[in-house]
Length: 471
Image 1 (cartoon, one colour):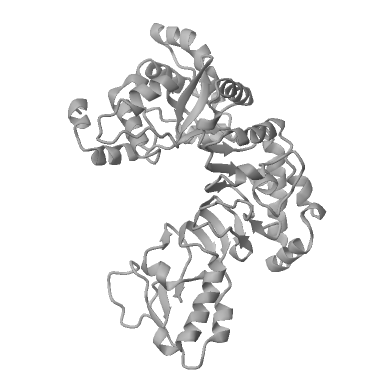
Image 2 (cartoon, rainbow, N blue to C red):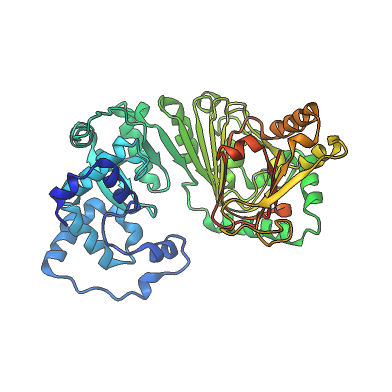
């Protein structure tokens, strides 16, 4: 490939190329092995043979590894990968294609590669980019970033806002988190952070796994999940066993949360795990004075993202009303959620549920059927995109069904009451997306027709939805 010709292509084409890189700038193939090693499922270092290094590789290891070891130690099981990384480290950050990729990411406000994270490297505050497995790809000082990326682009529009700078506790060790926060506070750059990712910093994997297994046993041995849910709702959080499990005990994470108030530009927060969710996100969860996220911080947040929460409504209610300016709620890798117990602020318009297992949809159809007049009619057809062939009898075919309440079959005031009931359940949401939601109870969802017809209800990937009812 000719780099000069490639860089002359329109930015819209280059954007698509960079998007499909998926954040991997090198050919260091360590994804599968990294997952195993990172989660301590297998000690791969005992199986991989030690490489025979050249003199150049030995020099690089001796000179560079002490500098970059805080970000490479997690990958020590793969010496060959580290040798490759050290070779790339000398020049990758200066490569014209990589610099253009970072510029295009800046032009699209961090939506191509993702956020740039604040880190400390070689005793300097830097902006680094990590791939999805926390392998550091490139890094720049803020002055370099401003000169080479923000001011160095040749596109028509110069965008000086950097509302995608973040700090990620998952990719940093406790020592690095302390150093980064201290340095940022000294240099007064905490207000530049737009996005913070919070996860348990202390290593408590064993105890958390035991608790998770215990909770799984509770679910699996219960003959009636509704009975289990009602028992949970009838008891306060502090009265339940959950109160002990979800207390926030990580002193560094508590300190980190205390710094959020100084991040004046903070607009988005992501959290991983039940402990942080129940202690700091869910207003119906556990509360302890001096711990968690302050109310002033919650008022600034417009986007909230949850990862690996086992049961969104285990405490009875998933209450987000304290996040008074929340516009987007994204939920990933969820085990169980009852949307009937989801309470959102009026400002929240977007809900995305991704790669989740058990979802209970809003139970509103029974109320709607209770006010329908005799003679009402539902029109059944095959779901759009389910088939390219027009079925003669849509009600008898095996395709996903689209069932629409015929407005001409009922009085206008009754139709209005039906729509009012449905919109009350949706609580202001005007965009819902389901991606790989494997088990939706009753295999049926009920949605407003106006949202569906305007592509505001979307189903992607694998799911068991057999019927979509439009009101």
